[in-house]
Length: 510
Image (cartoon, rainbow, N blue to C red):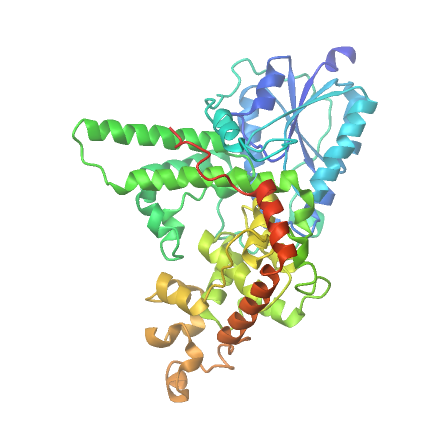
């Protein structure tokens, strides 16, 4: 009887929580009865870049995945602990000989974990098959031709759920229930009431709403925090946790574009903005993989500067705790900065331009090394993807050596992106009565006006913790001196060759 229970095809679900377009699941289903496994890994969940919001979203994805698998008679076995220890115990119970999963480009913890799993599978003579689910290429020798390889991979039609999927006889295997934040001594999820919900169905609903309704003005409306909440696709967290795949999103957008062109050919009126919006969305899906490739190629960028000429530029060992706390809590005295941070802390999401502004402010205005601010943002972003995140943190702090330096003016960003103060007043209610003309710089209000508006600077709302003009000039001068050095320029050329995009390398997606 025990021998009959041993034949299983073990699928290890990580950040690929869906049944459709799932190469590992399809490969396992083609070989025999399937057991699905999820591991609550203490090392991952207790890490500095993890937050209760991530666990909450993952659990919602898992609940839906469990229902989908149950439809096929497949059990999702949940266990907790070190991955190798979990596999060893399961092997002792079943003597499984094949393990399937997707290729993960994660943080250093998951990278080292995967190395340990490789060693374990070799010791136990277990065949581990990993499948790509993004456009990231393992062991890439050079960037030339990467875009063409990405296109070839993405042109493959998304796979449906395996038709022949059947479950293994494994009721004797004991698992754990749903683990929540309290099981790992995590602080409560600050975003629980306002963040997005996890799962393939909610991800697909967001994608369809974007492609058919809200995304028409995406190209222009994505920059403002007033409009971006509705105009953006809002599928990033679902991509991070694999509730949707990049390929699914690309093909859905291509289908929508084709339908629009057919409607236009039939004489129907379509909004001309749709084509550019879809093109912009598809471009960002490609950039999603482009940035993940950087971490795949050079894992050390999670901690170390892309450009070693930037070592020592900022204090890497000490991050001013007062400045960091004011930035993290939205108490900098700059309304646009504070509104964005408070919105992010409360919801888990913020549009790209405002994310860049937050990181730029920490790096240039406060002159903080990117690592500590980056960790806070990693915890707050529901869609935290290490490969994208750490590349962006370094890009916005000027340490990639190959990207344009952008020192955002919080005043100008408010005037350009929220001129009526709709977003700022929502998230910084202390400024609710401040007139539009003072909203970007409330410290400029006469004292009588401050009392009239119930917003006395230094009492009801903080004065700026740094002077923008001074910080801008000092940051610009420091970065200019660094980048003018011949050694820094030589290193920049090397970084461009290894990590830079290749202009004109990719065709329009369909």
